[in-house]
Length: 255
Ligand code: FPP
Image (cartoon, rainbow, N blue to C red; front, side, top):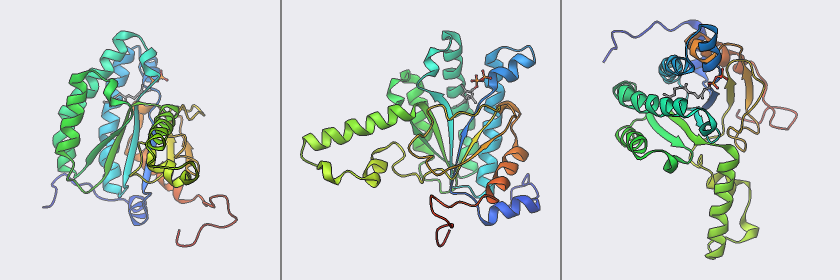
C-alpha cells in the first residue's frame, strides 16, 4: 500500500538508505534547558521531547536503521524532584498508549532495557502491552532504556554469571567477552555504531558503557526538543564519512 503522506526521499537520505548503521543510540539531553530558555516548566520540555522521539523513530525506520536505542530514564533520574519523576512516568504511559498505532503502522518493534521491575505496576503494564503487541513487527527495533544504567547492567550481568557458576552451569575459565555480551540486557542487539548526544555535553552519562567501546560519537548543540529529522540525517551523514578501524590500522574486511 502506498502511504499517502510518504515524503520524497532526498539524495542525502537515499545515500544513508544504501548503507544504514545497524544501531544508533541517542542520549536525549536538553529538555530542561530548552524549557528554561522559553520560560516554560521542565515538564513542558519533556513533553516537547516526546514529540522529537516520535519524529526520530519514524525517520530511523524510513532510513533503514536496524536498532534505535533511546536513553529515556536513567537509574539516577529518581533523584529529580518527585513531581518531575511523576510527570516522566505519566508521559511514558501516555506516549506508549498514543504511539502504539503509529508503531504498528511503521512496522516498529518495541523492546526495553533496564530495571523495569522497579517501575510502578501501571507503567510496567503499559510497557508490556506495547512490547507484546509489536513483537511480530520486522522493521526498526526501538529500544527504550528505562531505569537504565551502564554500571547497573554490568552489575546485573556479573551477578547472573556468579549465580550460574554457583549452580555449576559456567566455569570461570569460560567467561570471555562474548559471554559477558550475551549476559547484558542487550544480548540480542548489535553494539551501537553511532552514539548521538544532544545539547552539547561531552559525557556518556553511564549509557551502554560496555557496548559503546567502538561506537562513533556525535555531539550536537541542538537541544533534544529541537532535534528533528534533518539533524538526524546530518548525524548519519557525518557517521558515513568516518573511517572505523576498531583498533587496527585499516577498516576490517567486509566492513
Ligand atoms: C534529559 O533532559 C532528558 C531526559 C531526562 C530523558 C528523556 C525524556 C524525554 C525525551 C521525555 C519523554 C520520554 C518518553 C519515553 C516519552 P534534561 O531534563 O536532563 O535536560 P537538561 O540537562 O537541559 O536539564
